[in-house]
Length: 417
Ligand SMILES: *Cc1c(COP(=O)(O)O)cnc(C)c1O
Ligand SMILES: [Zn+2]
Image: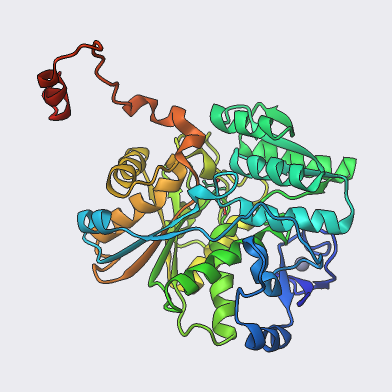
């Protein structure tokens, strides 16, 4: 293993690779550091991703697991689609979608949770706990099953029903909280502190899950033949996916595998957008979103209550990259989800389509140029939140088995009403 220690992003205190959550000195976020000289030597013999194993573990040189055979459900290796129809519609010559809808549990959360679950195995814990808006819980359920670990999942009681059913199928102990994601987050933290469970919530409360998100960058660079996108758009709640992708590209540059760096765009839903608000106000510090979230993008409806430092960290990374944060209204998210399905054949949950809604808006405002190379992360599968689309469902025409074919033709031509 080339990971060597944890370092606090604020006070620089260094810790070993232990089951610690936040910096015990100042309470801020811990980041995993590697011995890059050794990684470089190792990769110059084999090349990146040539470890002959499946899932994210083909990048084990840049991941913090000391296990010889980490467990995997075949996460990662998701397609990068060039979107010709949407590109024409949005006036973008090089629009790509990184399709995380087809991860083992249907969202990108399998990447961070694969890493975190293997750390749990390595640390010898018997119970993992997480807070979740639904997708992280499903991923934890799946990987805990594979690993033979017990899991406890705190979700807001309003979690979309399909996500709840998926989570319960994996056999996890699900606890609904009368409140928001932030309330679930605080309960997971208290349970970890008082009951000794290992907290693998995919915010920045643990240093390990974020590392799994770096693998998006490694895949993107390879899929684009080591070219770097101008912009990468990522739906963000607290932002570990965005931060992980940026860290992944920094590592690739450090290892001499790519030349440039992408500009990162964080995408929030207008009805819960604390990071976008801080960006708009020019603040360095993010403050919590006091009112209840009002959006169909439940996967990013994060008020950051009691952990605003996570938003502050993500905002700092976004500014450093030369990028920006944008909040998009639900109607534009719905429109983008429909365009993505009808134009490109990809069915995404609302949260996941937010990146495309943002790409469209930023192209219209001239922030993104038509010749820019743009990658949108489509983070979760549409099957996970079918209820969100019921309001726009087009009910099928119902016919008798002996229906006249002229009538069928009229229906297909859109004249059947
Ligand atoms: C969790 C989640 C996000 C937000 O990711 P963070 O890195 O936690 O901010 C985006 N999209 C989907 C579908 C998610 O489940
Ligand atoms: Zn510290």
